Structures are given as C-alpha cells and as structure tokens.
Image (cartoon, rainbow, N blue to C red; front, side, top):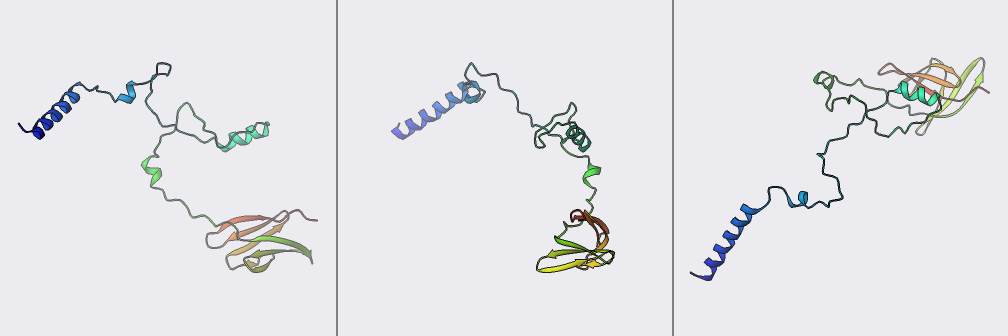
Length: 163
C-alpha cells in the first residue's frame, strides 16, 4: 500500500472509533465544576405591568415603585395575545401639540394666549382657529383647551395660573 492510502485509512478509522466512543452529551455540559449547581433549563422571564390604579394608590401612601422593575404575578399573562385582539387595528391619535407657550393677557373680559409654532407667533382666543388644525375651546388658566379638528380629539396645553 502506498503511504497516502495508509494515512487515509488510519484517519477514517480514527474518526470512526472517536464517533463510537464519544460521549452523548456535549463536553461543556459534563465538565462543570462541582461547586456549581446543576444546570436548569432556560425559561424566558415574563414581565407584567402594574395597573395604574395600583401605582397611584401606593404613591399616595408614600411608596415609590421602580417603574422599570420586572414584576411577576402568580398567573402570568400569555406571551402571545389571542387572535381576536391582534386583529383589532389601533385608533389614530392626535399628534403632540406643536405649540410653545409664550404668555397670556386678560383684556376686555377675554383671555388671549400667545403661542409659537416654528417661526410663527400665534394669538389664541376662545373659538378661534389656530394653524387651521386646532380650535380653541376654552381658555381657563392654568390650561388652554384645544380640539384637533381632523380627529375631533381634545387636548390641553398648560399656560400657568392667572396672575
């Protein structure tokens, strides 16, 4: 026999013996130090949100919760929502108010509120349109109440207390 065939036969034979005698488990799983606890199967941690009423009640009692902590309940919620819930489209929401409050003035029995949107300075009075997208419903310090006309959504802007 030629030397190449001998080397090939020994290599194939060696791999065959290794495959027959190799442990069924991976080596890393069996080579664990004795002081370590046995490995547990990994399970994903399910986080649940605390209801708002529970957070507000505990805050009123003087307790402060870590809002980003993982809380576990005795019966965790399912990982995937039921099919009926996932098919329900979310309702459109009004965008955040684009205005920056500058000041207010009470004159002639009526409030005027001065706002900035980009490079425009706007004056808001009750019943007026602001940027053709918002209608001023009421000006009652400490807030200015607006309606976003495309969706009919009501929003409020803090304008501070009356002097």
